[in-house]
Amino acid sequence: MIKLLRTAWEQLSLYLPVILMGVLALGTYWLVRSTPLLLPSEPESPAQHEPDYFMRKFSVKTFDSTGRLKSEVLGTDARHYPDTDTLEIDLVRIRSFNPQGGLTTASAQRALANADASEVQLLGDARVVRESVVGQAGRPQPRLEFRSEFLHAFMETERVKSHKPVTLRRGTDQFTADTMDFDNLERVIQLKGRVKGVLVPDAEK
Image (cartoon, rainbow, N blue to C red; front, side):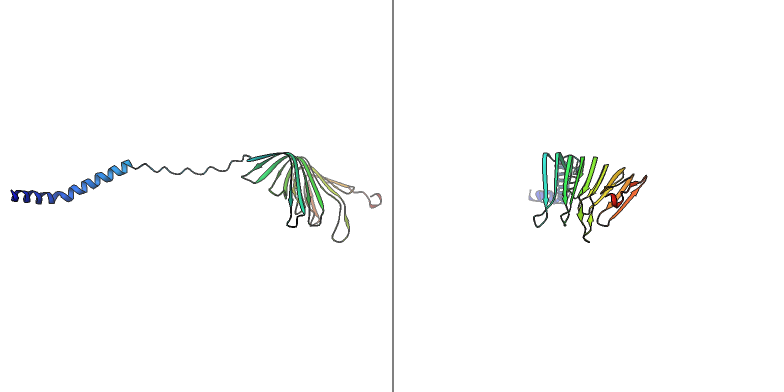
């Protein structure tokens, strides 16, 4: 009997590694079947150009590090777009002061402004006015006024551009052109297209 058991054990020992390999393979197969599939992560959807907050009949002021008023933006309605960090404003009015205290105002039916209103696109009955100031050399600089259906105003660098017909008034002088690029700091203006001008002699000013 003992000899028979020993013989059976020896035969079982020969097949035991094969049996264990089979059990391991079955276990691995069951584990793979039972494990849930990892779904690929969905790509992040691009930011939508939709407003995240609104304002009505508002006034927003910005100040410099000394507490001096830099700009004030007023409007009837405004919508902020987080993807571009811009404000779309209806019936906009803007006041901006340069470091010397010179005042520039802007108004339009609608405007698109960056976060601090240093760059503003004015659309529909657009108007930008730089009030008369005394220049660094002590010479007075006359009042400047720009009118167009579109004006792109850079308040801090005192630059105004337009790719549409524009009217410029400098004191009592008046110019019209198809496009314009005005740099107040460099005292340079570029008028292109059909340019016309009316210059009033000094004696009549």
